[in-house]
Amino acid sequence: MRWPQNTPPRQDSDAAAGIEISDAFERFSQRNDIFTRAFWDPRVKSKHTEKFFASYRMEAAPRRGDGFTQRDFALRNAAWLISDVIANRRGEDGIREGFQAAIENDTPVAPDPIAIEDPGQMSAEIKRISKFFGADLCGITDLDERWLYSARVDTRDFSEAPHPLPQGLNSVIVLGHEMEADLVATYPSALAGAATGREYSHETSVVMQLAAYIRNLGYEAVPSMNDTGLVIPYAVKAGLGEYARNQMVITPEFGPRLRFSKIFTNLPLTHDAPKPQGVRAFCDICTKCADACPVKALPFGAPQEGGSNISAIKGVRKWTSDAEKCFSFWAKLATDCAICMRVCPFNRDYTKVQNRVWLRLALSRFRKLALRLAKDHGTRVKPGTWWAQDSNTDT
Image (cartoon, rainbow, N blue to C red; front, side, top):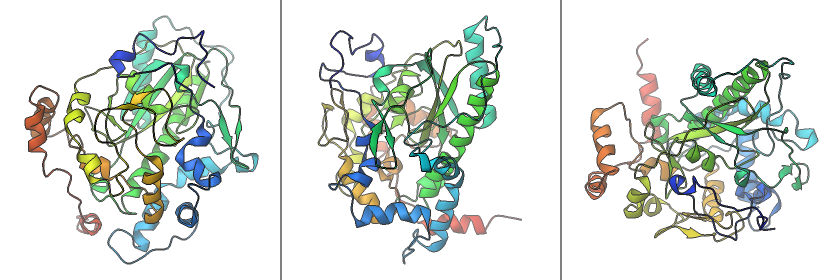
């Protein structure tokens, strides 16, 4: 069903956020995301996808090859542990928290909410507290219903199920969690998957703690990870970064090397604005991620509306990957792949002066020079190098 015709699908802030919506826009059903489809859609589900998911839940099948040993899988799966504990605690009810359903609140809303006289000051406080709990970035935007999933997924039979949010929620707190650069440099490998798992476990803790803080103040707060809504539009609208060809949000602090989580709340807050700085113009001339993709799942050329399969949101003009090709490669690896993150010219350590200088070039009219300077950027590091660094640490 298309977006109701009596409700304009566009917003005034769309242009600054780089969001292009057509009249064909439809809210996305999470049942159609590629990971959920791997459980019910015969076009995606295979013996490889079954082994992929099994490798996270039972003894993996290590094989010869740097980055895919028993030790590599052991670290990856251990990194996911906290996230898995929360995700699986309501599995008997068809609720997979943080992935196909919002995280259940463990803290009641205090009956007497504190008075908020200055929403701007409260926003600054929330950003400070988010970093106290371990988030690396924090931005705040409005609860834009276009990016809420039209339904959640009942994981007992993978049917659509309602996911009602509390009434009166009007803000989304978006949190960014940095992935370890040295692990990202080893993609594709099971070892590199530990960078993903660690941040999912971290963000589980952070969103639950920050939501509990807000609820203790007397306001609703729904902690959320991959569930409930598409986080990338919220991250862009919250001013944390810009959407890129590799389907990621490029941030000035960490490039694309982040996971994002979110909290839906009615706490009185001021909203941040999108901050376009020139990433789109750079991606227009850069195809390093698409060139490096082993299965050619990433797009060349200009952004287009729609996508090649039902895992693409309808009515949005953007760069869209072929999710089926992408996940088929993940399944055969038995671990996640982020080569596109590794080779992205924005994937840099911005504590270094030379990388901050490069960023200024990339976001300016000298972007072609920046692209030439990034010609050899993002070369894969052998996973054994990461383990060797660990063993050489002074005691």
